[in-house]
Amino acid sequence: MRVKISFPEKFCFQTEFIVPISYINYGNHVGNDSIVSIIHEARMRLFRKYNYTELAFEGKGIILVDAMIAYKGQAYHLDKLDIRLAITNITTYGFDILTLVQNEGKDIVHAKNALLCFDYKTNQLSALPENAKNWLQMLSE
Image (cartoon, rainbow, N blue to C red; front, side):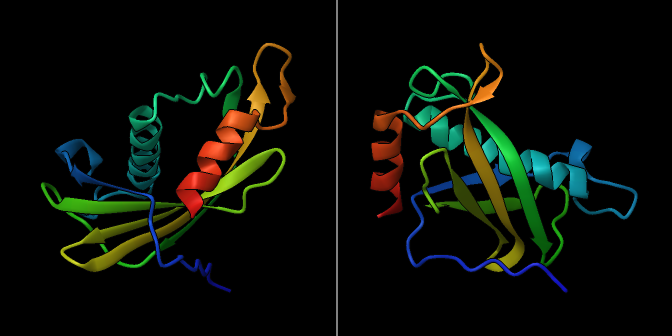
């Protein structure tokens, strides 16, 4: 059974990414490993816009615990990808980021990443700090 990811009507963040030659595989298109890097880059750009990082999330960190990717098309060297993110499924401990990657209006990738709040000092799961949870809820509206 194929992965199906449904997107909300509203995305909270949009960015562009130009495909470098180093992301091209032997099939002459963007490799699956590079797609993971592109999704990570988009997530970091969202966090950076609001002065967050994966290690500085209101005194805690963020850890990726789940990744689903549905490949819908191909991208090539120097393609300008349109990447949109949506925040969903906010819980006590984490949230999901949905990622839509398009090339000239055509879907290339649908992805869902589940992230949990993590205390890297104690190496344990942590509840989302209230300010971070409020920020995520604002982005998801």
